Length: 182
Image (cartoon, rainbow, N blue to C red; front, side, top):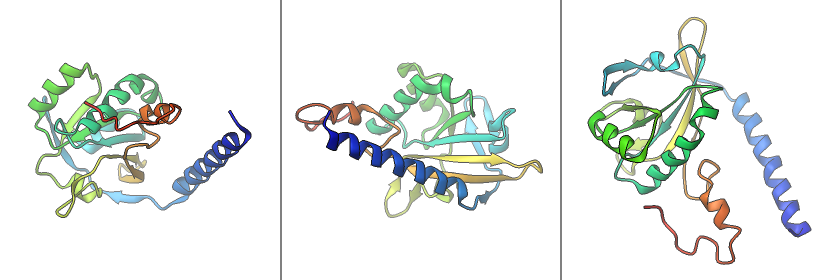
């Protein structure tokens, strides 16, 4: 590793720390207690918190997106560690039946909810008429009075910090070399 590369890595890490502080300092957004479909019936956003005051919701584009499937595969390997801090749930436009089949085929153990035809995904900024669905993650906090606020969110894209294969490929002579997930 050259000194130049190490210096850039340290600058990126410092910017990530600054970004985290800015996110935590931003004003939370009030949200309503949305309702979702699951394989076991309806569930409210407030119920997804379990005993925690915090919740992470991954916005997934569904079975048709190979990139979203890869992010979910990565999440599957991290779920135990993440859920020691906060529950995490994957929301997609797929029906609960399709979600169950896909999760079983991939070996996923995390909770999945469907927002097919619902308002949650567009209200959170992860679906629009112009561009369709977008992947990402939203963080929520449940206040003592039961009200819910979104404390942060970000979009997913190739090369982001939420799916490491691209960072590994950056180390290779020819980078990703046109690689795409299957």
